[in-house]
Amino acid sequence: MSENTPQLHSSIIALISLASGIAAKHPDMGLCQLDKLRHMGIPDSQIETVIEIARHIRDEAAQKLDVAFDEKASTKIVTDTNVDTNSGQSCCSSTSSGQSCC
Image (cartoon, rainbow, N blue to C red; front, side, top):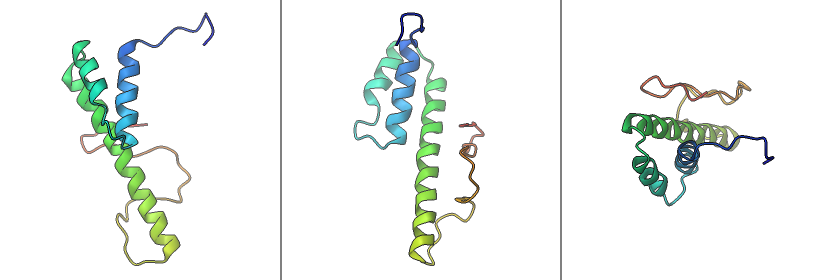
């Protein structure tokens, strides 16, 4: 980064790392970041929101991959008929509690 570019706050970096680890199914599950966030005093409600959005993105990606696989494999198994793999949209739907991940 250049000298004029402001650094992200360490709590933002930890939240990003936690979310990406969950979404990527990383084996460490973001537990290190979770401890850091709690020690920083980040409210559990904010951490829970990040976890919910990350899990939603991970699960939605898996559903879309399953649908695409089933279509290419010409199988009759369809895991979620509500997943639109051909829309061309990069935005995801909301989480079960209504949190937007876009």
